[in-house]
Image (cartoon, rainbow, N blue to C red; front, side, top):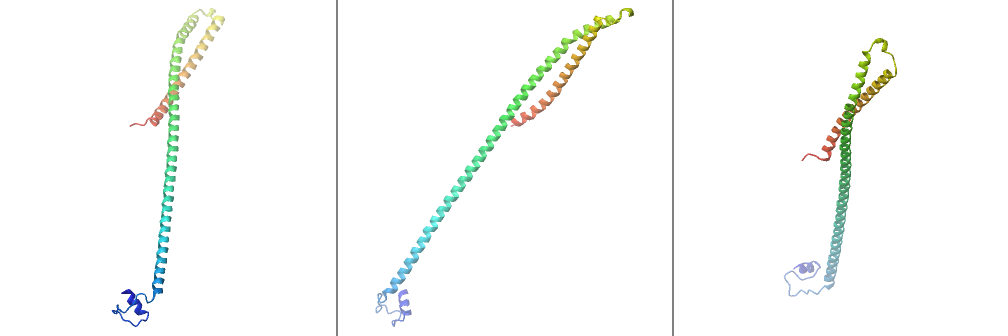
Length: 194
């Protein structure tokens, strides 16, 4: 039907409905031109479709590569972050261990200072007894002789020792309080509560 109307429009004298008298090979160049044109269009469309498919495949590959790069970059960043956190944690644990050791050392130092303080008391008391006994002597015998000078020097030495030991004990107490506070914060940082 399409050919008849096309043939009719080409100026043939036959009318539609006169199929018997129409020849389909009357104008073969028209079929060839139409076929060639349609085949050319089909080939062009197929080429465009293949090109689009190739482009989409390339785009998908590029997107996959970008996604893999992003995942690898994120993985490296996460690994670096984890490594950094592990390093910080290890450093904090080392500092915590050092603080704990220092606390133990200071407590031992405090015990030694207290023992030394207790060890000096009998000598101090003996020095005070000698001084009191000497003070009860008659006035004419109260001269500054070698024994009086020795008692005075010994009393000064004991006083200096007690002052030094009191400073050591006070410094130990102050440092122990500071380290206990630090160790509590480090312990909370390194070992968070569940």
